[in-house]
Image (cartoon, rainbow, N blue to C red; front, side, top):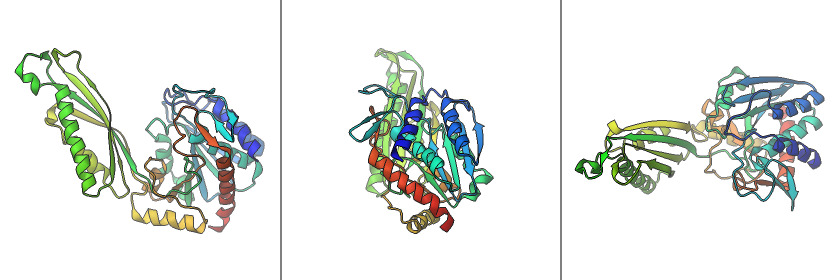
Length: 362
């Protein structure tokens, strides 16, 4: 079985699905390969939905399954620092190397192997915009009538094969500050400087993040980039800041967004754009209980809350129990020489196979 999984993983890794640059459409080679597996196995109905800008949903269903498996096929960019060919699967020391091998083409390869070797009902949702910080594919599917057919959604992100029922939400916010340019000898430059406005906001935001921690409200806050101005003797007319916050389940993301954006010294000088607002998993306590009951019935090992965000929260937010469960460690995702262990692939194969059979007992 593992050789079958690795054969599929080799093909999937060789398909360039880097996001950006969003060069994925319904006719992409990765869909042609999946088509070839499903056509050979038979019994699947397939629906492709092109949302534009490289966002494609590929939904395949056989029979009347009760569980839905969701896997994203897009990857982060290859980047620098690789000792191996990033778009070529390399097996060394019981590890499978290649971009996407961990996040999350390894899980996709397992599911394709199970398509070939199992006659169980299956529902597979492949998407291509998870890494683009939009999640249009999952958001649209979670609002469809089809979603009501499923008792459990398994989002196949790397969790070391433990079921995760809780993770942080994710806010990503871009702020553009503006002012009047001029000669740096003008006294007004102390205030009328976009860079100074950003600096004052940043100082207040960091202080508030510390205050949140003191109050026991668990939050990760990060200023990822700041830039603006032209030279030291010109009052900066434009400046921007890109920040993010990761919020624990139960947090009010809208309130956090409003609070931090309102820390600007002069609101007339700032425009804020929430580039991404992903809720925590779960948003509601009843959904946490539902996911935990599913894990107990299925005898799944449950892991602790994780700090990264997944699309499982989008399913949970609209009232459907969702867990995160997949092979690999998040530490290997997005890294140079990304890898997943062969042992993790084998363990996940066993778990997914068991879940397919357990659908009848739910």
